[in-house]
Structures are given as C-alpha cells and as structure tokens.
Amino acid sequence: MSSPDWALKISGLVRRFRPGGPAVLDGIEFTLRRGEYVAIMGESGVGKSTLLNLMAGLDRPDAGSILFEGEDLARLSDDDATRLRRRDMGFVFQAFHVLPYLDAADNVGLPLDLVGVPRPERDTRVAAMLAAVGLAGHSNRFPRELSGGELQRVAIARALVHRPRLLLADEPTGNLDPRTAGQVLALLRAQVHAQGASGILITHSRAAAETADRILMLDGRRLMPAGDPA
Image (cartoon, rainbow, N blue to C red):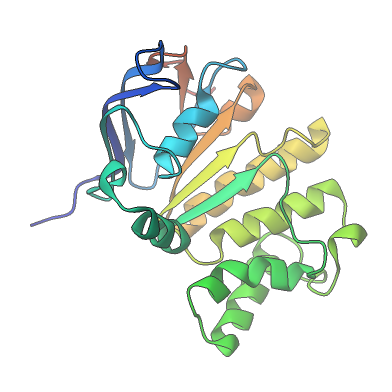
C-alpha cells in the first residue's frame, strides 16, 4: 500500500476550553502536502497557537482527527506522543528557548541526544547543520555571546538537525528586527525544503506569510485560503 501524498490531515477538528463552552476551533479541515511549507495567519487570540499545539500532539481536540503520516495524534498516549515529537517533529518559537549553560553546538545537538544518536554521528550532523544556517564558526559560543538573529539560527538548526518530517514554527521572528527577520524567514524556508520536511509557519505578519508556499487565514473557527504568495 503506497503512502499518502500528505503529511498532515485534519478533519472536523473542534476544541473548547471548557465543556459546553464556545468552540475556539470549530470543524477545522486542513491538509498539508508532503514537502509543502504553509503559513497560517490570524490576529492575536483567534486560536493559532491552540491549533499548533493540537498539530503537535501537545493538546487533544474535543472532536475530530489529526492524522500525522497516517497516525491519529488524538489517540496516542502521552508517552507515545512525546516519542513521536522527539523523532519526527521540530519546533521554532518566538522565544529562542536555548539553554544558557550550553554552547551553540550542544544546544543544536539536544534532539540527537534525546533519540540516542552516537556521539561521532551527532557531532558530524551538528557541525553540518550549524554550517547550513551560517554559524560554522560559532559552535563554541554561548547564548550570551550571540545576537538575536544568531540565536534564532541556532533554534532553526536544533529544530532540523534530527531530520524531522514536520517542522512547526510559531511567530519565529517576533523578537527580531525587520532585516534580521527577513533573513531568518528565508533561511527557515530554504532549510525546510532542503531537509525534505513539511512545515507550518504560524504568524500574524503578511510579509512573513509570503515566504511560504501557501497562505491560509484562521478566523477562530475556519481555515480559509488567503491567496498565494506573490
């Protein structure tokens, strides 16, 4: 049986914050094709981060299914969901979430440590990933010695070093100036495609969204096409 041509498929997704309360997400339908990089836009408070948490298996829907590579995230145990995230997903957030007591190389190497990659292979892959994001000479630098843009490059390298099948980015340039943000967004898109991953960018910025292959708008209940990037 051949694999589907999609990486993520959401059907009839409903999420309420309290039983019987209003639906934050109501009947969401969404398909992410393999190798596709999609931006999901929306104003603050419409449920973008809630949707991302559901896609990551960090939260569970009240109804509907979230199929990742054919596996329903809503039906996984907490332990199985954790293992799947470690193995198959990468994350980039607005806050860089780097560990201050580890240098750049060890921060990037954390996902490989968690899945037990042998040290020689780990070091090779970390060096290659740092080079890919333009930080080849920064492996021994600590977070306090790096700029905001460099810290986000470390975060991108960390998110992709274990070769995830899905990358989820939540407002990854919210703490960066416009010029640095543009560089990071271009790098993020390039690396998602270079790694052969599928990706979702959550953002309120049209300029950021236009770096994706396709743009959708979340209105709090529905995902709607927002026009293709220029």
